[in-house]
Image 1 (cartoon, rainbow, N blue to C red):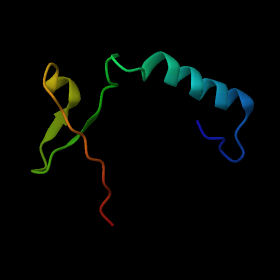
Image 2 (cartoon, rainbow, N blue to C red):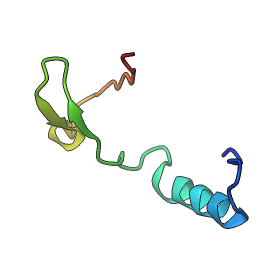
Image 3 (cartoon, helix red, strand yellow):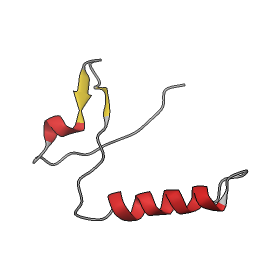
Image 4 (tube, rainbow, N blue to C red):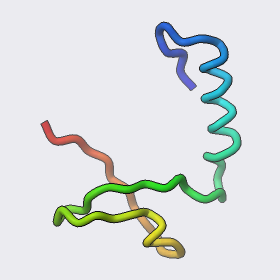
Length: 60
């Protein structure tokens, strides 16, 4: 967790609580929606039960 400038202690606690409840090893990944490399819509849940590698990048 990282303290955000201008954030409150409550914001930090809320972020930490979300991480503890939702981002543990073995828990389901949060839903992710986006476009694949061909521009087609995809959802992470479409690949449930399969090994998925996510590579996030930003085009400038």
